[in-house]
Image (cartoon, rainbow, N blue to C red; front, side):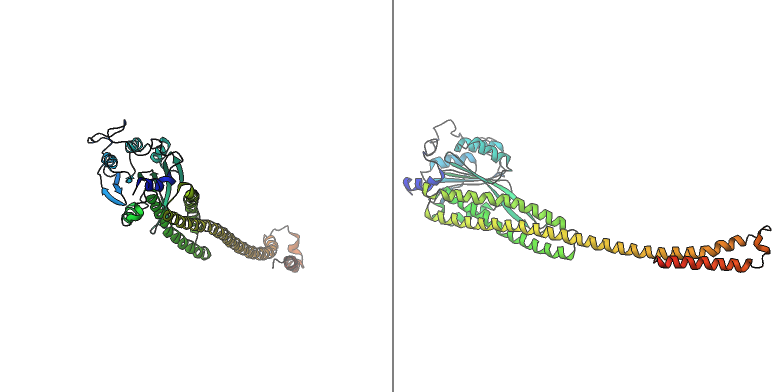
Length: 388
């Protein structure tokens, strides 16, 4: 690939005026940051667990697989124009990021974001370097929940640096895919950026399918009256908020890249690929918006059903209370009716000598008649009041 062709391929990544340091990296002997032979434990020999893989490519083919950051810097400088370094890191240390910043002239604000993580998806341009933050998503089948991981990319004219703060996406699969298509990889760092964007967006597909299945289950649980469904709706709604935060900015980012196609002379093949990714992420974003709307409707329906169930229970309790009150009324009425003759009989049963009715010949009929009159009167009163 000629230098003119390479400039065309990289032009969409850089503003007018080119790279701040004038283009290609200086030779090993030039500049204050030329790496010396690394010593054990130095910045040039990061722990093996953080540097997942580093490789140098020329014309779409891997030409070197250095074992350290310092070796990668040195090999990239030894290669001719048109070479590219692809460095994959997983939760790197601050010293490693500082080493990369010094070597590739990365902006300190971008390095701070990569150190802290927990950034919103965004695309920032610092000179001729793009800093991209992506939120990848995975659907976990066992707990039936969505997990989000963060990925940072530094994309320059001759390098791609990926900084993962989670398990997704599988960048080793992306690297294998690109190495299997050298004609695509030969387009440079922007082709790697496309491939990573495509992998992140493709990873949203299983998440969308899993969430759709969860919503179908939730609808069944709602109409079955499951008491735990409200909590599940709320948790899934929160995950959809996070999903929206991952997909909506990505739509804007891709449209921003597409708007610069003509200005920066992006390769036509990459234009088609990026448009396809933009279509997929737009579709995913619309699905997520639909999920949030559906969950809001389901939550409203569930609240209505719960209210109806509570009203039915209250009505049943009220009816039971009313029936109980009716029984108490009847019992109270009969108790009052029976109390009247009991009271008269009790008084006459005292057998006091001075009671005038004891010597009265009509005393007994009078007492019995009085009991009957009182009982009949109480019965009529209670009957009119619907107590009996």
